[in-house]
Length: 458
Ligand code: ADP
Ligand code: G6P
Image 1 (spheres, rainbow, N blue to C red):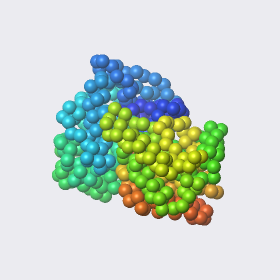
Image 2 (cartoon, protein in one colour; image 1 turned 60 degrees about the vertical axis):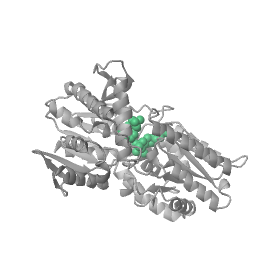
Image 3 (cartoon, protein in one colour; image 1 turned 30 degrees about the vertical axis):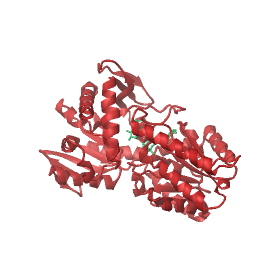
Image 4 (cartoon, protein in one colour; image 1 turned 135 degrees about the horizontal axis):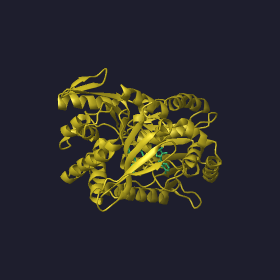
């Protein structure tokens, strides 16, 4: 069996994270896939050194090896905070208003991709499959080819692919996407993102595109693009559900809710997650219905993310202000309607919290997939499941069609969905959950990795 060489910006080995903060869907998924396959997980250590050396730090993890390199402060600023998180992330999440186009960011991004290629080459053996993750490394395949690597190389994009009309606002967009076409296989979370990508290749690059097979031909090369919706590690997650930690977390939240229906949100503190809009929907619910403070408790877990980036500092300030204002207006002396918690939790605890919540509120403005939606479904009790309210603009909406699907920007619609969820009869909850759970259980991260790897093997 071929070894797997996974490349991602962050190498986040799952040690049952405690208060360490956001983990993100990619890290959760790669832990699952690598545990299954074995191989090497290569990426940035998260550390900075004064001068880049490319020196590798190798370590053993559960069933695989990690190899990491340190980056210079300027690289971190231009490549990670800059091009990845101030240019590509906002643009790919439709926030063109937040996207910043600085030449230094682009140069830093290309430099770090070259450094990654240099450091990776000596690790790769002839039969290895190289699987690159996410928007940090769109040109890495092309760099690896330039160094003579002949192995099969694939890219999976965990975030949305923007419509062509948005993408063309990016300076040098053709160069970026053309570089991507050096990968043998390019995976997307949903059919919608895949179609946007193929549209771009045809329209802007004049590539020969076959929509049915997903092949894109340009300059004598062929790349195959395909949708591979990612899932959770269902087996591992369900096992966590059986632990005393999960039970304690459940009891703690359920007990402290004092008979109020718990609504839960769990998101990295990111402007793409639609968090202020959720509070607006709550505001409408509390304004139009009587006695909501005695009936509903909204718990929003939101660990801070990318704190060196201004738009993230701003979203954090906005939320602090909005939750404070909301609670000021709607609390009683012994009841506070929103609990807003800025930290990470152990995944077993999250399981317990999800189960204690009768409504899962997952309303990103845009999201590649959204694994929280799937975790929420998996954690429900089959005989008394909660209701998932899900944004139509998350990749997960293509699969989880039995959720209450909403437009997160339409407060009235979200308010209505909250009301419907609060009153949904048990029969309907069960029927919806059965269908949702079948998708979450049967299309898990193991199958996702197998499908991608099979395509990569060709
Ligand atoms: P993203 O990848 O944009 O962060 P996803 O919903 O796809 O969004 O994945 C988020 C992952 O991070 C989920 O597996 C979720 O459980 C995990 N996560 C989010 N917030 C926390 C938290 N406070 N503590 C622990 N894990 C968290
Ligand atoms: C999303 C991205 C990942 C990223 C994660 C956490 O899941 O798709 O690539 O790792 O968010 O973000 P961070 O910037 O902290 O790595």
